[in-house]
Image (cartoon, rainbow, N blue to C red):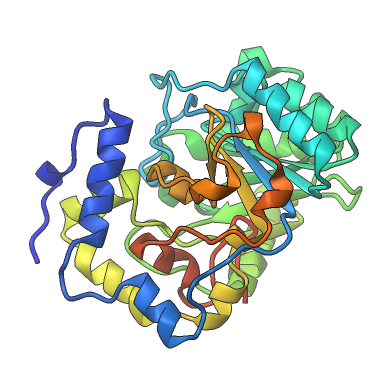
Length: 347
């Protein structure tokens, strides 16, 4: 099979790009389909259980442009959640007892509705997670952000490709590692990562077309080396598999690693990882209010099944219990090896 970057449409048309990515992922090429593996494992169709996480993607605006970003986020993106949609998210929380509100982006903190969502969700007694790229904490416009997060007991889950500069900067841009260290030290000074209850976790994903190693081993190395080299403390480290979508899909195509990487994911398929997949206990809200089974389906424009309601402004989340999960070949990324989710390994 030969696939080139010319098969991807330009980044300026996200919907068309999503459709074309789906065409690439689902083409007839002799590789196993995810639904086939589910049937072999007696797990088809996948269905949701109790909804424990409402993940809210507030938009694609970001202060960085990372090579691996599945959101295709950056400073030039204009997709931003409105106050009306944010209020609809809060109304949904009032009527359904979701335990966790997981706010992501882009860089969610620079979006106008971020603090409104945090204060509203915390006021309802929900645990709030901020998916942070770290460097946003150094922006002049965000000088009080760490204090805000600490005041509202927001858990910070931050992306850091490695505990050395070369690997981190290769994935996220020159100078990002040093900027990330400055941000981590700010969080440490505010009690994050220090056993105070203000949790600070890091997310590791491989630089390249590889599956992540053992989460326990990575966590041990990160915590030891960050403390030894930089006097930085974190509570935990999650490993996440790179999903073959968006910019990472472009990288796979350009480097000639597309087919071999998909084969790695398929060969590492683990039915136990499917059982713990995050989509089964999550609803993901897009910046425009559209509902998805997960953030990855969101980037491929694959909304939840129509019968349960597809927009946060007019849906009862209770209807999403038991919904059928929309799947595709990209789902092998979450079902490979020890599993991959927003909270790291699932097995």
